[in-house]
Length: 197
Image (tube, rainbow, N blue to C red; front, side):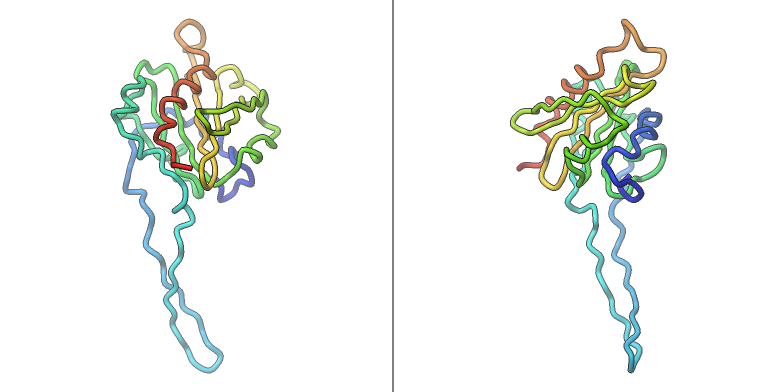
């Protein structure tokens, strides 16, 4: 997401369509550093360089225990770390389908800031809030998915964690809950797993 994005939720449209996630693969772990070679002016020298993992400081939401996810009414078998089948550079992502199949829930961790989130013009209804003692920001997308989607971004060390609920098509009405109320319920329940400040 951050590879081509200048602000935190650039892949939100893709994520909104793709949060019917299925299958978390822990094999998407960090790749080994790649040596590079450099040429000196008088002789050829090969120098091994180590590259620091750019995502090392980013908290991984797939570390949340399955028991906690299941207890909240989410289907642990639907867990995935991709956005539309793509591993987003600069982000760590995990998402689940509700057990009742009425909404998708995604958790996205990055080094972006709440201020970057607030500056986006493709989101509206910004509300400053807190989750426990943490500073947070609630907002919704502009356009067709406004009423069925809600985000809650929570400040953590080294960035933010975005929580998102998106009601699935065909579940609007009695069978679908209010997405901002549901994302707050889930976020407050999972806040204990966020990185310590």
